[in-house]
Length: 243
Image (cartoon, rainbow, N blue to C red; front, side, top):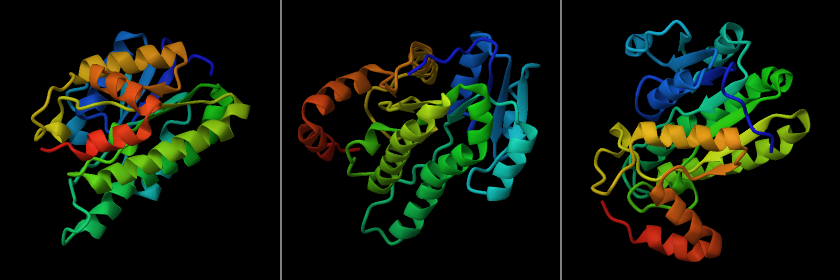
């Protein structure tokens, strides 16, 4: 895979108003990005991103009309970071499990699919790429958030399919599989967490090095070694995890 160059590029970051999305936006700016479209459902939450290279963009990835508006406003995008995510910690047998699973799939799978589908022509022209923020839970299910893991497993499969499809047009497709990150989404996990800024830096290092499957923290690297040697052992290890 060709390495993506951050300096001088134009990027779109979904879910840029907090957590990893905010950290990615900051890190892109530090690395000389020419412009970054910082996307969020509510523009008021982007007020703290005050930098002339930051263009706030109202975008709900579950809304088809928002996605179509986004390509009109950001037709010069060269690198897409599909970062917006939702974790409801629904159990399979919970009273709202199906409804909550649908919500997670809308954000975590259909959202990136809409963005990729809409921005594919622009990415073909730029020859740059897509970075899908997946999860280790998409590779091995975590018992206390199974439907979230299922949505990220769907994103993992989409990442592989897009990589195969877009290779011919010169568009790189990266998948990110991080461990616990110190953000609102992981607030209830009583385990060591990597800082969002450290993870963002590791992601961009790997993207610029042309790494396809990115494990951007120590927990993720340890899991990757186990997963590559024995997916079944990795499955059992995650199945034993507790809150």
